[in-house]
Image 1 (cartoon, helix red, strand yellow):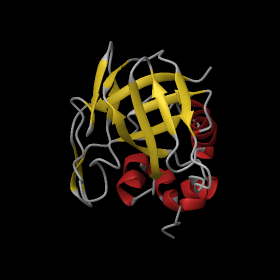
Image 2 (tube, rainbow, N blue to C red):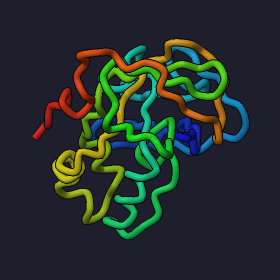
Image 3 (cartoon, rainbow, N blue to C red):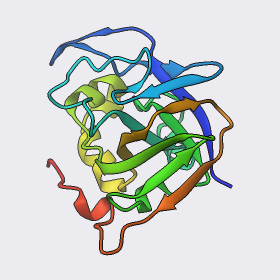
Image 4 (cartoon, one colour):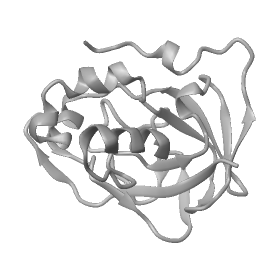
Length: 182
């Protein structure tokens, strides 16, 4: 059964040469965490023009995709490293449909709204030699992960099951909705 590996929120705001400040530094939270319309309680989106709001309240990334990048980059990429709020396992987040709904734990329900579009802030976060061409490389692998809207508030925690409860007929697949920025 698919499960939630970690729930992450901003650890600290960091200086960013492009936006002045970034909240990409997410780290796992312990215990039950409340979800509200703007996502994980206590999280921050520093660049609200491109992140956050109702339709981008949460960002999910799969442990399987993180493992791929760990191999590619030759380093550990713990939950939150991709700026994600939810690290999942056992669910192909990139095969989701726009409008698909997931129940997480007993009460929370989220809905897939759009794919992540990697940006230069993300590239700067990756840093070093890997930074050059990162947006194009990340896009080409099509391991983007979805943004999610909170449909029903609730408390979630690492280890909670994730269940796909609705898949709308005729909806676009997440990766079909992606528009490569390159």
